[in-house]
Image (cartoon, rainbow, N blue to C red; front, top):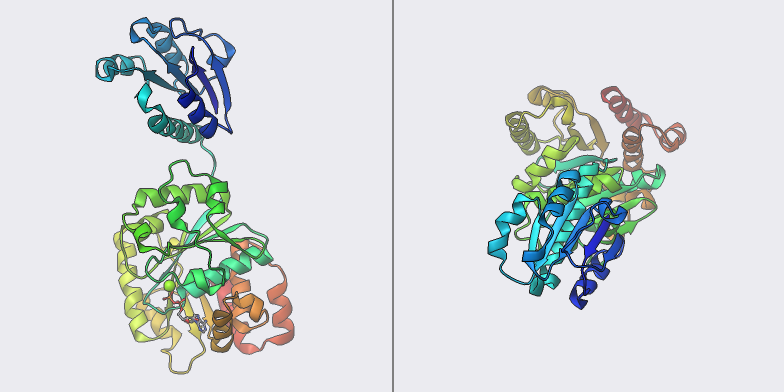
Length: 399
Ligand SMILES: Nc1ncnc2c1ncn2[C@@H]1O[C@H](COP(=O)(O)OP(=O)(O)O)[C@@H](O)[C@H]1O
Ligand SMILES: [Mg+2]
């Protein structure tokens, strides 16, 4: 951002705030009074944030300020005054000044002005989002949602070299935070959720990197940090995340609240995860009713049947009839490897790369990435039998 400052005396507090908060900006000082503002000067004409440190409002070159704002509607103009704000506010607004702050408050208030100018500029330039949002929600607790979301994020980052963010939004249990790593650093969503100047690198630095391409943003370990999080704050995280990551996975808890609704609204795809026994079917129906009420298109919802292969389960066909939809994918039951991976705090793919569930996850990741790494085919060809072939064939049909 081009920042131009009119200030005859360059007071130290102004210098400090600008040095700290405009370090990455193009900062130019015009060491002149505000009695005459040269709006044709190239550094002024190109300014995206024009700061006027004005010791005497009576002598301010109001007409040039107005002309500048008319010519550059995308720019932000901020006025710093010694006092008497109330008297000047109306006039300042009329000439298009966005912020008026007291000189004695520069250290506190100017930071917000700079942040808002950055955000405005980013919105005007419309920084494109590159990533898609996929949310994972359990039809009932214990569906395997967090486990699948976390391990799928890992496989996608590892085998496809995609940049994947896994956002653990289970503020109560935060299981996803522990399924694929034993790193116990305290960086979390709580560090970034209230930041209005958030960008990709600062979001990344609040994450734990796992493997080659997966970043985990943990749910706050401290419940106080999770209290009062608003849907708008979460929206901001998602916007920045989609500008910085190719895939944004959000692990949701079962409870529906304004936060999970906002995530689902913003999601490209929602994966409700269930097991094929009765209580999960009821949970799936409850979610379906909600999706209908929210007018989500059917194409946005992809129900996944987890822990398949257990004999006591209800036949799939019956469940599909009850839900009036087909399963998008079936994930095999793999108790032994799953337990081993959880106990080690490591991704399943690292513990059992050729296990049934790993293979199904690789296939799912292949579909998301739009191409095969060959890993799934190789392993199926050599190692796996009929059961898994059936899972994969079904998945391919419904993709
Ligand atoms: N395909 C699977 N095979 C065996 N165990 C699984 C499978 N998927 C998940 N699990 C286990 O189910 C338990 C609950 O999973 P979790 O992801 O925490 O559920 P949810 O997030 O839906 O509440 C975990 O112990 C996990 O290891
Ligand atoms: Mg969970």
